[in-house]
Length: 96
Image (cartoon, rainbow, N blue to C red; front, side):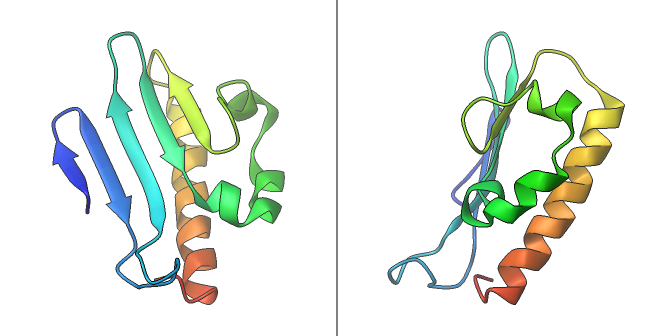
């Protein structure tokens, strides 16, 4: 864990798989008008992007970030499933 504050949570892997350094896995940051969710497995394992629904894609900023200005239980459930799948992909690639 790199950051764990009330407005910023940032998680790296524990293995040295990125040129001898831990790899970024994900982060959540509370900003003034929105909350951003950064999820690196979508960038590292590009085939995972097929799992992202059109509705969730509308929240996308860049390749691996989603912004929310209000809670959305349906999209949060989809993100939960993506995180589980991303964790499994990282594990299979020996990034964890």
